[in-house]
Amino acid sequence: MNIEDISTICNSLTSVTTDIKWEDHLCFNIGEKMFFITSLENIPTNASFKVSDEDFEELTNKAGFKPAPYLARYKWVYVDDLNRLSKEEWERYIFKSYELISSKFSKKKRVALGIAE
Image (tube, rainbow, N blue to C red; front, side, top):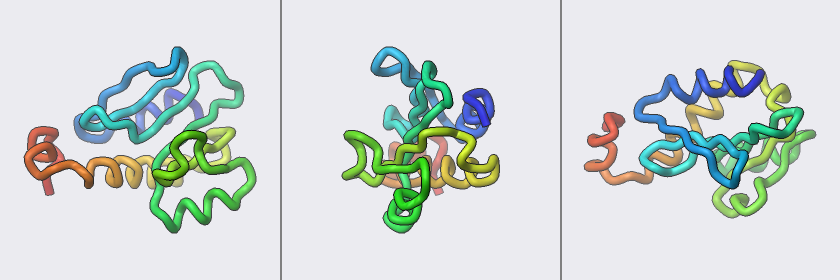
C-alpha cells in the first residue's frame, strides 16, 4: 500500500476533502473533521486513524501499532507502515473511521454533506 492507494480509498467516500497540516501531513476530512492522517515525508509511510473502542484495544496490541500521539484519548491509532494492513483491511478501517467521525454530525450537516441515512 502507498499514499496513492490510500487516497483512492479515502476519495471514494462522499464529500471527502484533503489538506496539508503541520507542514507535511496529508489529512483526509469529512465536514472539516479529520478521519485519516498520513505523512508525506516518512518512509515507510505511516498513518493515524480513528477506530472503535474494540479495534483500539486490538490494534494497539499488534506490532507496529500504538495509540496515536495527541489523539489517543479520542481512540485514534498510529501505524508505522501502511503495509501492515491489506487493502481490504484498509478499506474497512478507513470506512469505519469516516463513519465514526461523520456519525457525530447533526442530521442537517449530514444532509448538507450528502451522507444522510
